Length: 244
Image (tube, rainbow, N blue to C red; front, side, top):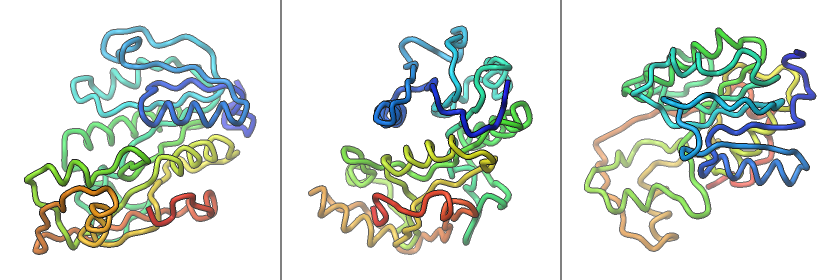
């Protein structure tokens, strides 16, 4: 095995052909890169054998499986599953942090899902240290998916003075691909659009755009976290959706 080299892009295995994974597969096809993938119908982490189809890049894309221990999750992946492994995590691992955070910031998970992600990250980085990258994605939006829709239907107040930390699916797909081509990719990468208006300003404009009711804002609730990156400006300087 020739781990961590730039040629690890000839074929991909995508564990999780959901909203993000299917978009990634389409983008790879546009680059003339073959891929195979699984859905929750044909592969369940808790009970099924891990797919044995060969690939150069293995993309792990699953929501936190809090009923499956992080150890069992990581141990299910074969030792030589791919030449490069990419795992999509979440900026929720910074839950308790305040101010500007980056990849060097110590995590402060505050939910069971975030704690699960932190332990999975740690185990993956230790086991596959020479050829893995963890991508901590911001809140994911896209052409047909936006949080303002669910917020408009919810009675839960939104911290209006807090700042957004989101990313569009089209940009995230291209960042994932860019990481796969790096010869010395960062072990952890924050993938968040460098656009951070207040939630009050952003969701008010978004509600008008999507023609939905305004969310309920609580202006006394404040979270000042801005998720930044030490690497993203060089890796991905041209955003498709730079203002979301």
